[in-house]
Image 1 (tube, rainbow, N blue to C red):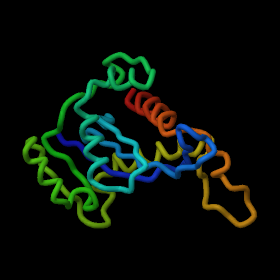
Image 2 (spheres, helix red, strand yellow; image 1 turned 135 degrees about the vertical axis):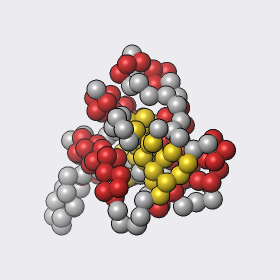
Image 3 (cartoon, rainbow, N blue to C red; image 1 turned 90 degrees about the vertical axis):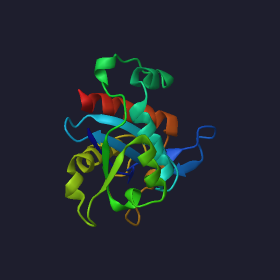
Image 4 (spheres, helix red, strand yellow; image 1 turned 180 degrees about the horizontal axis):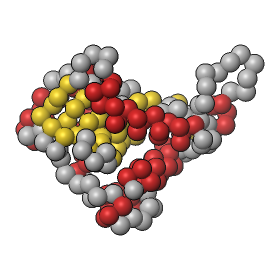
Amino acid sequence: LLYMGDSAVGDIYLVHSFDRKKIIGRPNIYPILDDFSGLVAGIAVTNENPNWMPFLLALDNCNRDKVEYCAEYGIRISKSMWPSEGFPAAIKLDRAEGISRVSTKLNNLQIRIENTASYRPDWKGLVEKWIHLMNLEAQRLPGGITHPHKRGENDVRLLACLTPEEFIKAIIHFVIFYNN
C-alpha cells in the first residue's frame, strides 16, 4: 500500500473563529492519497507554516474512522463514502516533508518514506492534481483567490467570511465528492 502526500497553500483567505472581522490568512492543506485507487486517505488543514507536524496530523487522519471524523464536523456519511482507514506500507513525499529527522520516526510504525527527486512533482502527479482541483473549488468560496491582486482592484481578503472549521467542512465535502 503506497500513499503519496504533499502540502499546499489554499487559494482562500479565512477569518478568525471568534472574531470574523480578523483575517487570519491562507490555510495550509495536507492531503494524502492512495497511489493505486486515487482515494483521499487523509487530510489536515492548519494555519501553521509548512512543516512535519501538520503532515503527521494528516497521517493520523488516514488511520481514523472517517464516519466518526466527519461527525465531529456535523457531516453524516456512511463508511462506503470514505472507505479509508489505516496506515500505508510506504509514503511518497517530496523533499520538503520527506527529509527530516522526524520522518525517520515513522520507521517505528513500519512506514517506509520515499522521496521524489527535486523539481519532479510529476512523480506524484495524483496528489498534485487533487490540490489543483481543491484550489479551484476554494476559489469559488467567499475570500477565494482567482488571480494575483492588481493595483486598483478590490481586496479579495475583505470578502473572506469562512472560519477554519467551516473551510474544513467544505474540504470534507470536496473529499467525499472526489472519492465517489
